[in-house]
Image (tube, rainbow, N blue to C red; front, side, top):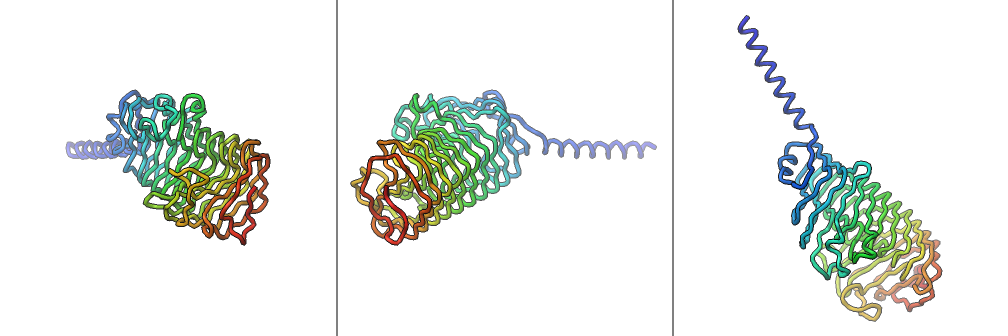
Length: 367
């Protein structure tokens, strides 16, 4: 009888221990308050991480690197103390990661603490949210406020889906925001961005390099438009197979844009803009320019080292303010090829410019 009791007590202990370890491994862990000292322990022990009303100390990154099979949920207000440094404020890498935001949650970059009207030329400012070397990830229902600099960076990532994201840097219009790019893609493949709202002072989307990039149902306010580039002066200067569709730009400086850097090499190919609406664009409805960078446009030399080929524009409609230009192409002769523009109708701009480099066998035009 004594043996029987001892056996079952030991068996019960082992069973409870197993259940405890299993429950701990699958449990939710919460980061809150004004410290991230416990972050490494949470990363190593939890598959469901909740960031709830967290204030990240100055000069520290909310660092979710090297994680796999993890869910991260932002709740309440996530904010950051001020320090002059390059950041990023949040960094995520790994494999099989889901990132989401609870209803009414906000990731507040506290941009006014850094904004100085000078952007990249002023004090050093951190990126707000960066995905780097991340594969197989879903990012949904996030709301960003007041990015110090670029908001959402996607660098060297594969198989990324982003849905229902708001970037609100509207305060930067009056408080000195600059270079507050919305989505910045570099060296990434199979990226899908959909159902997003961006109010900022720079590109709504900037694809600097990568392959098979999709952007759809975007709503861009103010800013510098839906851009390919700038291309040049980086390790990877190839952009291919980009699909931008069913999107609207309101009161942006620029609508549709391809920008390559003078005296550089690279490739832009397989770019598709489809069903884009422009409303009250201030400077250029459509602009392709091959001298982006240090030298002043439009009189600077044009790069002949970055072909711009297989460019499709379909159903690009809208208006430019009177002082703006509807369509402007300024690239080196022979750089462009295989352009197909259909149902392109941009009106309102009365500032006409002399265009260069439109492929002679294309239906593209200057206006």
